[in-house]
Picture 1 (tube, rainbow, N blue to C red):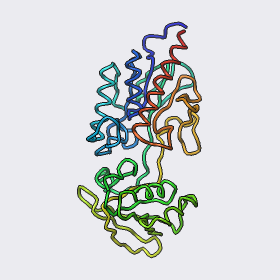
Picture 2: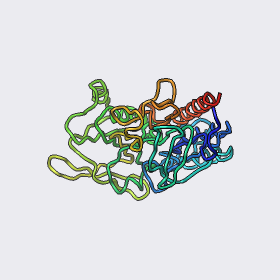
Picture 3: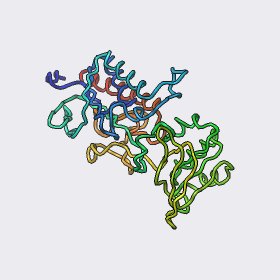
Picture 4: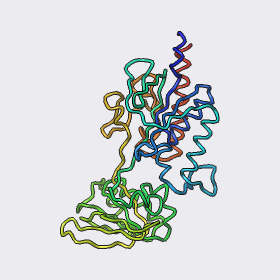
Length: 319
């Protein structure tokens, strides 16, 4: 195969959470000089560093027995990728064209071309839209029980939601908290019957039906929440020191609508056991294609997979 034009890069990585930065480390070490378009600092959906930039202490990432702050962990990821030659653009991708190779990626009016692309734009937790959420995320407010449950040993906390994920989070949190109140805006759960029964049978779980959270109180940590009865409109205060939002996640895939195959909830589809998408030479990793685990360590692992898949695919093109 002929050598590509000099302005065509071997690989572009879109997104810079644990998946994208791990892919950058591996592809950079393979001398592929990846260009990482990492997102905008002002963006809450696909900011540089991903969701860990909104996390305080990370205690479950291997290799850090005393824990590490989320932003510090991602800064280390980025520095490691840069050390091996990864190039970074701190902007947001505005358009892509994967209809032919080389693939084309735009940042505003600037066009970049590459032989292969790794998509690692992640997913974001749906939030309640309250002002306090931005201030208190990581300070008593969380979207991940597996990540943060340990910090609430002996506390009374609340879980907001009514689906399987909310019930699963609440049940898991009873391992640590003294009491978990599930707040749901309706009078019945959407969760599967077996999940509901587990919650009903758990003595640590209490239900607060027909209520919404209308305020989260606290300056630098959660101190209580204000809830409103959806039937009567009555407002009351719940004394909790932790709030877990479990109303769903949304993958950051708008950019790829009509371009890459997605499931019914918008997650990118990859070939089982690989990171390959429906377009040859385009790979996906991390939370943008994983709606099961959603952990930094699994995202990093899939970033490694995508890098190796891309490297081998590029080798096959030049064989």
